[in-house]
Amino acid sequence: MDNLNERLEDFLDGQLTGNELNLLLVDIEKNKELAKEMNLRLEVNHQIKDKGFFELQDKLAIQLNNPNSNNPVINLGKDFLRTWHLAAASFALILVVGGLWYILSNKPYSTEKLVSKYYKPAHPILQIRSVEANNENALDQAFKFYKENDFNNALKYFNSIENQITAKFYSGICYIELEQFDQAIESFSYIINDNDNLFVEHANWYLGLIYLMDNQKGKAIEQFEKIAEEENHYAAQANDILKYLN
Amino acid sequence: MQEIRVEEIIDGIRNRSTDVLEYIYKSYYHQINVFINKNDGSDEDAKDIYQDAILVIYQKIQKDKLTLNCSFNTYLYSVCRLLWLKQLEKRKLRKSFLEESVKFLELDDDLLTLYDTNERFKLYQEHFSKLSYNCQKILELFLAQIQLKEIARILGFKSDQYVKKRKHQCKEKLIASIKSDPRFNEIIK
Image (tube, rainbow over all chains, first blue to last red; front, side, top):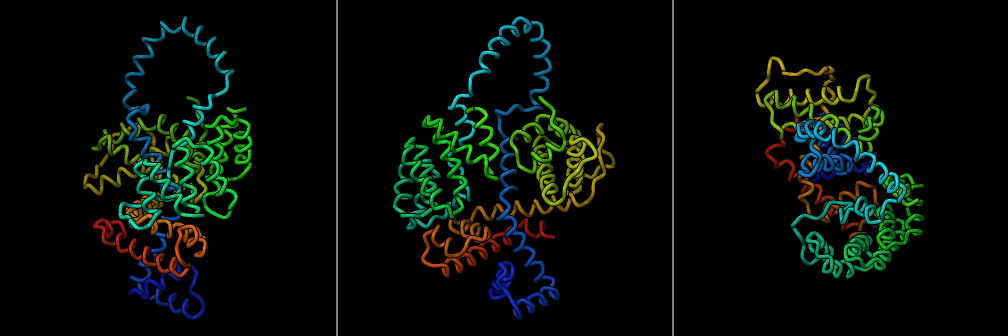
């Protein structure tokens, strides 16, 4: 069975060729159970790759379960009554509010508001490890502390792993959380300069946010302009930020 | 709240836009909630059906180009209605008629097929998230077609051969875990 599963995996990974491939294809055609097994493994691969689906699922779950959200079901009755009661009192107020709005709307969006809107602390790009840790592995130890928001201890372990991209990336997040922006910039710059890894896009994004947090507006604008020009996950958000910064 | 065109809603779902999701929720969720509650459901059921409907629509958008000849409200309601009927069947509560006052479309069964696929995806994801950190990362990086050597470098492993062996072990562990789930036989039909 093990050997068969290995052949299936090699087939799905595109590593079977020639006679081996032909034999497996014949087996799959003849054997319904084998075909089902292959479909299961193929679907599991799709699930692992489909980050978009689970990102959407998470967003919907947050929306539906957030007790502070403006729940259209609960608030419908309240809003209806409130509208009538406030209508009479609001005419005079509108004039004052309107004037204030005009003045305030010409002020740029504050940096703090931008950061709190766009910075999502420590959400992992990839799945955070499960609780079954291998305690001897520095990366596992680092993530154990990281999960507990103990960024100082997490850093000790991340920094003990030399020249490892994942460790560098998450050490950058730890430095952000500890407001050690110079070190955070160093970590993300390492990833960006390496360029040949999965974290580059995210490192560029966080670098932009760090410049915002550190009140380096000019560098922030430059960084977000660079992100906005690229076709990636953060381009739309970078454009939003630039509207406020400019 | 400014109205958004159907095409923008579809784009927004495709891109998982928080603003568009917020708009859909604020504009349409109440009606779904009322429908579910009037037809043997609860608030929790309404949340589940709403979430499942958006996920089905998302998958539909990814697979085919979705063009609507009706309002998004009608389409969403129709999808929720279809999923709720299926749920009632499962609970053996099939009704001869539903209490509803909203127009709906008769939809193809392919949406139910997408729903079933999504249910399987959720099961796989549950078990995937229980794997160790390294196993998850090996599988993700491998399926993102990162070279074995690079995976070894990223994760600090000895060699690409070791990565290959671990990848195989992790995948087998995941498959075994999924198959051991009591829901597996129900979901895989």
